[in-house]
Image (cartoon, rainbow, N blue to C red; front, side, top):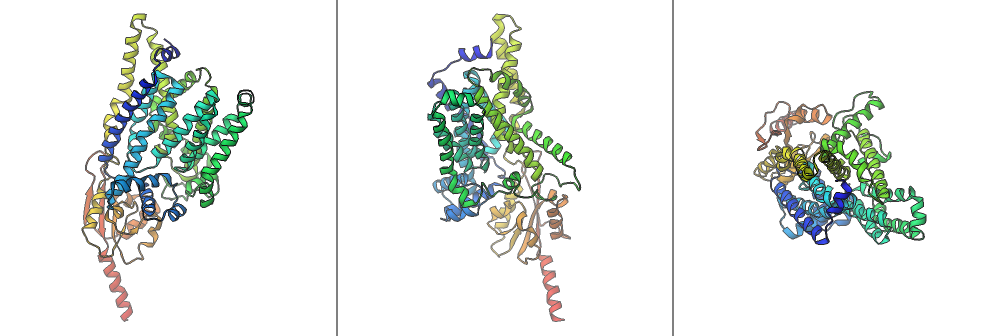
Length: 526
């Protein structure tokens, strides 16, 4: 049985698809709820989103939009959810951020399923969709306080509409492309890639534009241009550019590469490192990120999956669009590492929405190819056995990782923050490069951005740091060592479970500050 025959035999009505989508949303909702309720701590980037949401909630929305480095849709969602659930404690803001991210994660199953249905057909649409959420990274990002789920909700909505337009030529889908890509851009700067990719695809399909669209082609191009300008233009004008994130400026070449010991670098840049080695390391980092965002078996089988899936009738323009998006995304990831020294798996999630369905298509062809060897009456049992094997290889070994607490082992920071809260409000500041203990304690202090000012501030009493930060090779590690030199921790906290258990140390600099004060007093008397 060929894949195309399999698609035809599995045709469903709208009720059947709706039932699948509701079932999938229920399963994803349960997964994200479990993960959100079992978070040891949220990702540090969430501190920026929550800070922006708090500013919006206080009525300083315009100021927050102007000054924040992050795009506004996700912080707006956090502020909206927080208005509903109430409270003003750190935990209430964390809950609001996780709920907003999780809701978007559940909702994006709908456009993702429709994209898989469009590209792969009825039979593979649901397995490919659920496999995206079965990759451990997906749930952990969507249940965290990160903007990826919000971005992908609008990105996939716009992408699905673009795919339908490129197959059918119906311009009714174009407004949804504009709105989806516009809201995706207002969630994360990479959302701008979608309209650019659609323009590129149309430029690469001149015969279809002239003969298939005709005069409608002018309407389409005008709608994309005007719609994008209306949606994102005011934000671009207000910010003075496509985005204020340092990574965006480095990608576009309007800012220099990160310094050799920059905080964001996964490893310090070697002195006199050649461009060739820089790109080699970038390629390895991108490959590692993709293997975690997609899984290695799916990544390998995505290549034959793309080949067979694109053979479906009328799909060439769709796969041209996906090829443009994939190529641009890969180049951006490589350049992200070259210019900034980092590329994490969550940066590869846009590509994973394409490669995971393709990997499932590859598995389907492999299974059907093997099944054809069996006698005809045993073909279907052979296919069932094949899919059970796929489930065994791709999902079962990762169940524990899928359900593991978010940021497993880093709960010591939360406990450190609560411990600091019990010390009272004496005006002392906290030095914590991650910012977590300051968030949970409600105290001000110093993080990565302004660490150099901490030693000169007499109020910087508490230092919260994990052991890795005291022995690392970065410049900030040396500054932290100098801050606690000669001191022993007053309390040590440790993540509750898991192999990544991390010791969080709290130092009290009061003895050092008292000694410095006495020295200054003695000098003044002399």
